[in-house]
Image 1 (cartoon, rainbow, N blue to C red):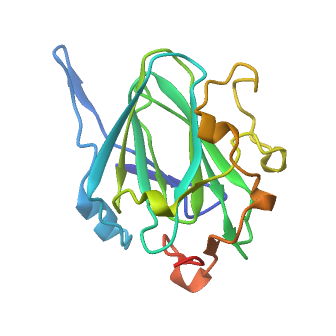
Image 2: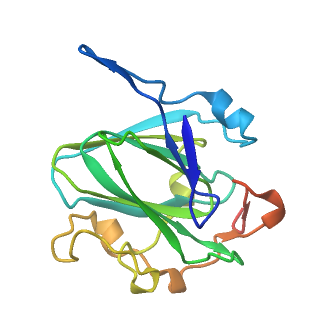
Length: 199
């Protein structure tokens, strides 16, 4: 397992090893001991699988707050996406900044997104399938979002506003500047720990 960090240190890229021969390949895509050895206090409890049939599908920017915030571990098993995580922890030195990375079935990379970040992806190919782990169950009363193309976030999306395929809910999500304080930055709890401002 190869682990690398970004300018926002709480976002982590993981690349599992693949062992291949003329039959195909084998890969350990997740092992809890990797996180335990790194001192990361995340225990995933559920897998979600999303399929998008066309290029330019945008899902996000989503997050869960309150008593059940979610960490996510995202990987692609078919096709490719531009995966984006935005820091929405008020008081963070990287508040409003983002990490954007291409995840694909070919590069076999994963992105670990802790609570306190809004998550979104855009499909780069047709027939794209994404699997992601979460560490808390879905709570519809603690779900929120931010506008995917909020100009203040300066995300370089590979699709135009006119061509993006979005849900009605994502299309009208608020801007970050118009959103309440969902999370507060707590550097003494880094990495991967935040205090929810809306318990």
